[in-house]
Length: 278
Image (tube, rainbow, N blue to C red; front, side):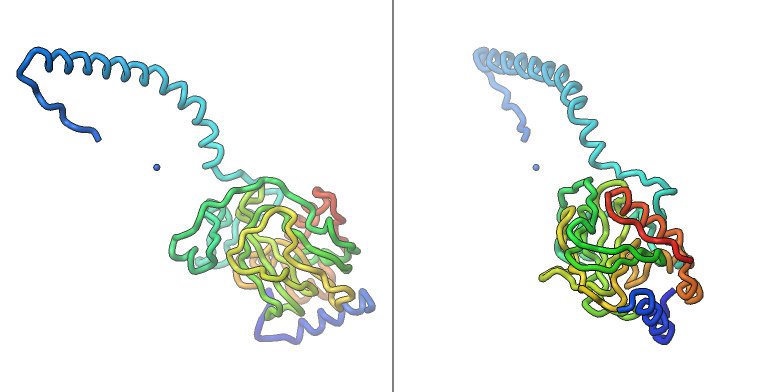
């Protein structure tokens, strides 16, 4: 796990990166006293009973037509445990990805999220290769997947931005994280770090669509970029929260299970997978 109070190991990691690259009323009826009024009331009652009968016959059919669609939108997607990590469990304060996935994405940022004033956002289950618009060279798999290159980085799917920093502690560069709000990985966090620049105006709580550019790769950046599964906790990676990675693993180029999982997702979307070097 990254130790934010001790930067020396990151300088060593930085140097190793350089070496690898080189550069939505009813009312009561009033009783009448004459027969005419009673007749009108009787006629109205008969008509009311007739209408109720019609509703009773038609209602089940209407419910049959609307029921499945309503349940389909309400139920959260089921995620395969083998495809990617299911929960973050290192600390009691950490909420499970499944719980986070059932929350309503918030368009008003962190304050609106906490106040419960979030708006319903249309979800899109499509996933897109985030590297489709860039020119990259795949490098090692560690906590995530490293790449060198240039061009825009898109959102994998419909998502809510959860972290934006042009310079992040513990990382040699920027850190951008978003939470997917649709598709099989709904609720999961994805991060883009190191040699990237956040898209102009990108802000916390913003909702983005699949393929929308949220960052740009800095050409020839010394450490390149790293993308992978985030923990949704500050700038931590999922691999670090799972204790899959440490300084020795970094030095030995050990590929984490989380890194391999993310690499496999990129490959399934048509992008270049990372390399297992250690």
